Length: 570
Length: 53
Image (cartoon, rainbow over all chains, first blue to last red; front, side):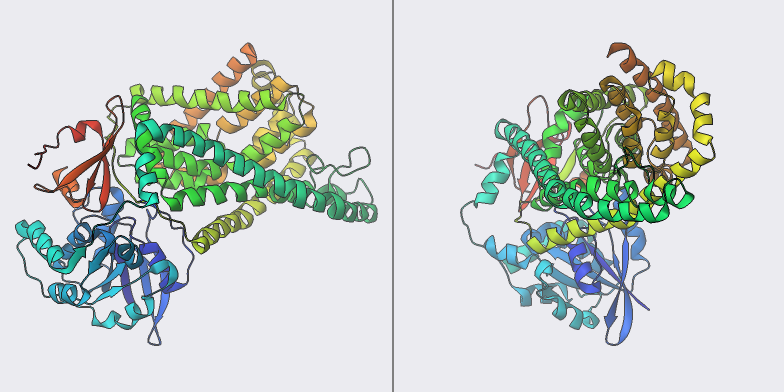
């Protein structure tokens, strides 16, 4: 089978071309480094099937970052290279093209972002460019699919090119080509470009960042609460609860199936947070309590990503982050981690050194609660006597802990944090379809991957209670849980389930009748003591058993220390 | 490092324009062709520029 490699600079739209060619859905954003691992897909090519590989973006073939290393290694395995080129950035992109042409593999150039180039007043003489490079050049607008069919049709024309040059002369050869084929008409700054400048200049950028943060928060709350209040709660209370009560009557209370499916009735009624049945709590927690917030969060994140805001935020926070021993771009794993720690952990690959990646991943795993957990904490605190104070205490503690741990890492782990060095993409108006698709993809991922784990969690709780394991562990860990943290022994069940799903674990605190202080301690403990199994597996794969053992030891120490401290001072 | 800078278009002799700088020795951003690049302070101050006359 023919292997087609999609190669090009970071953030030129390779993944969009990939989705167009294969029909596969992949996450694309407007910042360099979204694709850190290669993605494979299949496409039809004159009745035969070909394999398409979306290679992480690279500026050169001399590998300088882990992602570029992957790209260079992949080169050997391809039969044809589709070189995706950003038409608005011809010179820098053709630098890679020239290197690809020198590699001896057949190349075809997709001149992507053709529409943006036109808007920017950049005209490129296609015929001349083709002649100079000696390979086919096809203009494309990947998000709308323009030019993709021509690209496929001309794929077999891909050749090794005819351009001859001395490696030393590459930049001057390049300059010559660009001068020959490109004409730029001068025009005024667009609104987006002004906004782009303003959001990077500190005097306007910092206020803007604060506004963006507040707006994001407000939109997430509005959409999340709106969906729960007007769609999910009415459905679960009005339709699902009576249905389940009917089922409860049929099953007869107290039996095995009743306990498993419906759980326990509280005051003769189903309480979705507390009943702990597969069909009650097991469905309500992921679908009604968490999903609306997950959806809202990804809506906001996806828009910010596609506009191109995140790298700017990375530059703005870089000064402060470097004082903490971190790189400004660490903001990206943290932002993604607020949604789910799994993609957060994977996105640490945009950082250059292993040390940085380890610090970022560990900080995230300990101090950044995922949206599922956050939604449940908000829900749980909402039932306490002072929700605002409780939420401030929980998230404030996590934020302080984040800073303290970063400083400890800075001094304890040998090594420097390399300076920021990143391309800042222009602001783009997000394609409505692309954002919609991305939100759908991430939300679907949550439904297919998280919901089974929630059900498993609820199932395991029932089994553990039935086998008296929870009671046993409660006694075993009583010194820590009761004396050190000031929590009831039953909280051990939540900690146990927290290994599986943090949202279910937070939900399990509801029936314990905790005081505000206990709620705060329990929520913080659930966030810091250990990552959920999905995150843990990814971290283990990324960093290996030895480093994970260190991180796990740190988590235990932090949990013991912070829990004890909170119990003392609150 | 020179190679990485060059790969982003910051090669010897390239024309650049500074677009922003963060206070307290924070990153500096420059425009090279149609690319905007952010550089850490230490890196940026090692970039030698000649003001065109």
